[in-house]
Image (cartoon, rainbow, N blue to C red; front, side, top):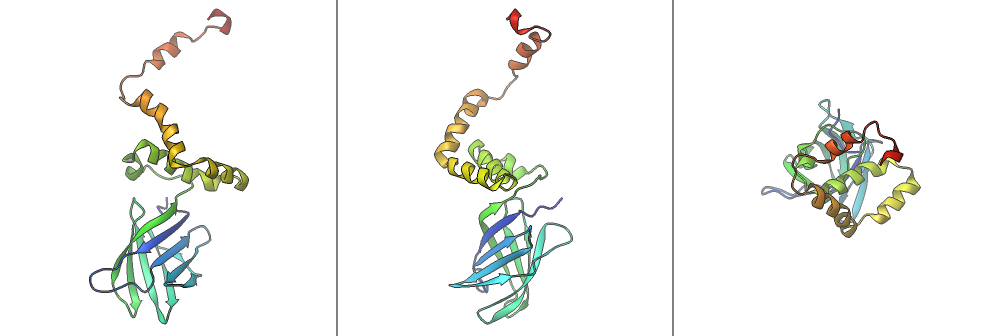
Length: 183
């Protein structure tokens, strides 16, 4: 299963030796298209190709007189290792996500497991939005804020704040076979 998100925006960092040919990289992995931005110039990436291992992609670029090819691999946190293989700049850069939509079903992620509960809620909502009808997704987006996530997380913290053996299962087991009228 692919580790690539459905859609993402990244900001490339300068390294000690040079500056990347563009600062912003946006890719939609559903349509395999994207764009790059350098200063106020944005150019499309019309041919984004997945790497065979499923953990990265490559594309050709042409912006502000600089052209070449780059290859990027993604880690579990969404950070890219971008390697410019041809062109005027041949170097590696790190790109950190500014927006990332995982969507779809994914394997177990140690990145998500390590998140705080409110961040897990945000991640699950971000993954669910692309699967919803557009009008429903828009309403859900309007309901989600840092404050609302804190409110949603509060009952979880009070009930499960100290994980231990559950007392709900024995109580539920005692109710089996009884009708509503017997309570």
